[in-house]
Image (cartoon, rainbow, N blue to C red):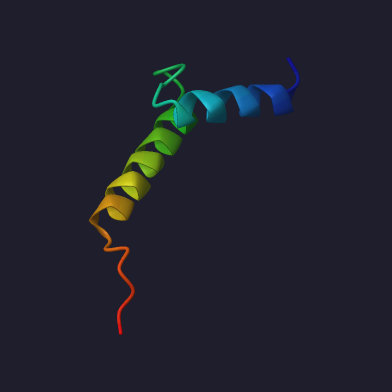
Amino acid sequence: MTPEEDTDALLDALGRGELPDPGDRAARLLAALLEDVDQRRSSVSMTPST
């Protein structure tokens, strides 16, 4: 695989909520950031303020 294909595979796996290689520090960091963003998004009201 090319580096681009590796990156795409990693991002696809993270998008599905999977952690392809738990020993990969970068993958763990990306998964933690994704989880944080998901939590923040779920706590934000989508109703516009007036």
